[in-house]
Amino acid sequence: MLVCIGEILADMIGEEKNGVTTYERKAGGAPFNVACALKKFGADVKFVGSVGDDLIGRFLIKYAEDFGMDTTYIHQNTERNTTLAFVELNEEGDRSFCFYRKNTADYCMPKVSDELIGSADIVCIGSLMLADESCVDYALEIIRRAHSFGKTVAFDVNYRTDIFRDTESATETYKKILAESDIVKFSEDEVEIFTEDYVNSLTDKLVLITLGKNGSEWRYKGKRNAVPTITVKPVDTTGAGDAFFAGALSVIDKKVGMPLTEQVLNESLRFGNIAGALNTTGRGAIDNLPGLDTVNENLNKINI
Image (tube, rainbow, N blue to C red; front, side):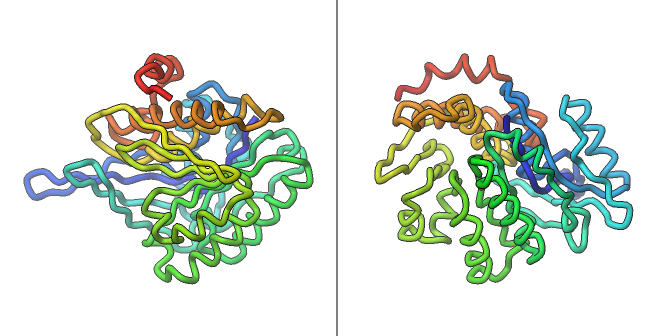
């Protein structure tokens, strides 16, 4: 079982037609995206997050319910609004973000019980909360409790310049979480931000790096391998990395307690690559997630 902890928000995806920009509301937030993708891929998953007791918050809780997610651990804050992320796409489907997130609900994350952490195989930590110092302590405390139970901790960097305008101090904050995590994910752009030397220094971690249309790469215990992906025509890349991460983790979760062999790592990235690629062929981070059968049907298109 996996527990995903972090932001849940509404992605407001913009589109300009005839000089007028309109925004389509979609459920989002990286750890919530990962949780929904894990659910779609057949994994047992719980999500922990906070929304406001407002129109957007109620939309997100209903969305989660309709998706089949357990909403027990989604807290409704009566004093704060739900976070919004405004997203604009270019002609290639690549996105730019602008967050409406000042003193919103995900600054006040709910407590996580020992029972929930103890029931998990993998605990996934979101990164948006790291913009607030108290939430950094919250994340570190959960990670240390997870490790006390012998659990694996996964962390996606998911760096957003709109949240962290001071890159130097932001990377130092991130490094506190990276140092304590077992599985860490970077995009190739994030490798440049943190530097190749730093990423290479994480020899005690399983490092996953997304490479866009070129697939992804794993690095583990001094070894590495790049795994290709399938070719698609992207419409919206929002959530592609989350679908990839969920796909890879869903494979790894089935191997908990077993050695992470090169074959397991190659298979996890192949599954993740296909999930991420197919997710870009429609709008929104969750609405276009491929099902388990669809991903499996495409596995033979990638030789590893």
